[in-house]
Length: 417
Ligand SMILES: [Zn+2]
Image (cartoon, rainbow, N blue to C red):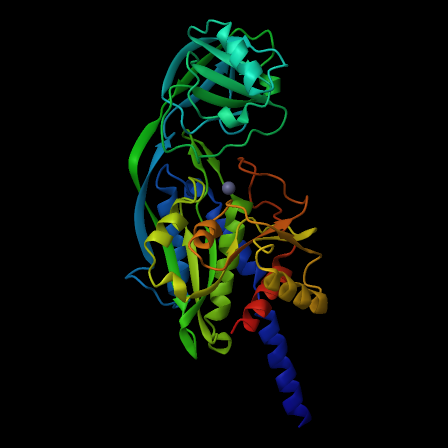
């Protein structure tokens, strides 16, 4: 009997160790953030390479597919920067991605343009408009330190380009890449644009792809007793891709972290001993960075009725966690917040679960808007701050709350069975 108890104890330990596998998650992240994946965007088929990698993981786990190959192809328009992205201020050559970023709505540009430094007082729309009225901008770029963020990526009549200066690492985003405008927007590090600089020389080669072909990757584990009801785990596997021939954006936290956890959850539920009562679907979307394209496409072309999804958990940027997690939509779903807090109160998985109201800031949103009960979880903490930059790498990646969040999710999902 004693021996039997020991065996049972050993089995329990093994099962709990297998409950999450941070080594597996790190391996996945390392692969997804490698130069070979080209930033999982729209240059050199980065997104396709990443999708192929995810498919191979799903195959290894022997997950079920709604299609022949786990893939759901679709297209969207995207302006890309596959060629030269060169910038010189006076005679100094700056590095794309590191010293400056170019808006993804930019047209191709080649030439030397004079720089006009706007006064620091240019902080709001009306002062900006007034300032523009009084100036002639032939063949020149306006250099601004103010906060003109909401104009970023838009046409400003009369202006060839705008350089927004920042003291921080400039963020890039590609959500305005669906159209090309006539103003070239650049965000640059202030230190490289001294007020005495006279001109900027640019050579930017863009390629507009009206129907860039991409794909969502979707698999599921069939439920034991209630296979027609689904719990969904979602994450976007895409990131920003490349700017020019060399600079790539690895997107470790955004969102190789969420992709790793979804794959790890898939590995967990694919084990016979963990087979759930309801089916569990794992949806990895592309096009999130381009403006929630993959999840939006999915909700209008679902692979099974959306009404069969009982609950959806979206994971995006879950690599930190020293300060806990935030759960978007829990102001609408207080029951979810209370249940998660009760579990966490008992097990102390993570430091804090913070509620947040609706926010259309990741792939849960199109589902929520289609009536699917959905939440979005991200972790909080200062241990990894690189965001939308070439520095969001997996080097010394914290994964602080990885284990705690994994356990919270699987314990919570058990209550939904
Ligand atoms: Zn992002």
